[in-house]
Length: 282
Image (cartoon, rainbow, N blue to C red):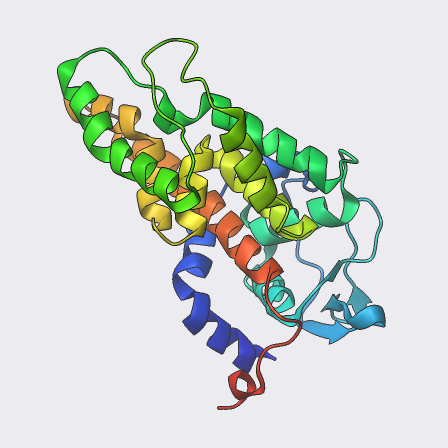
């Protein structure tokens, strides 16, 4: 199995390393385990295929379960391998707050808010009305220019990519998003399965931006670029006034880790059910 892990790391290496880059997470960790850490209770991690072709995670001889008591199953082998990697990476103490993919799977499996996909889509699209890149400042001049130079290209890209109008505004009310734009995005999001939509909503809440999330998922932006653009005003203030270096770095890596995990989760949730046989070979 762990030959496959090596191959998977080579395929998704950057995202996997970013997922472990930082020790904390917030949004879906509201639905994580009640305890932040506990002593490790297993030696070996493996995956197996169960009923209906779903994949399970085995800790020694015990099948992993969700916080809600459901059997922990994922729809395909690549995602199972990635989750197994998180559990295999734990040492003497289980640090659940580093296990972003496991947490996202728990959320998809238990669905603690009891929402369907349409409700998740509506919740995600609400962020379009308060999208980070759509809200602009009037001053100082340096920040006005920075927002224009860095955010406008991404805004123009998504408008052209999806043939929509979004715009930007310095008004406290923000730009008025046309209903046609919302409808276009709604139809696009309907193509996502429930698991992928769980991941996308998570990414949107991290970046507080539909525009940046789509830019990253469509591979127009890297994780690092999307995170930096979501923190543009903060970075400007830091460059101007300075910062507590360790705190800035911690926050940056934390957001990168969560965002990378969400992006990887979306991609793996859309994978075919098994790893191609050539990935299993030396």
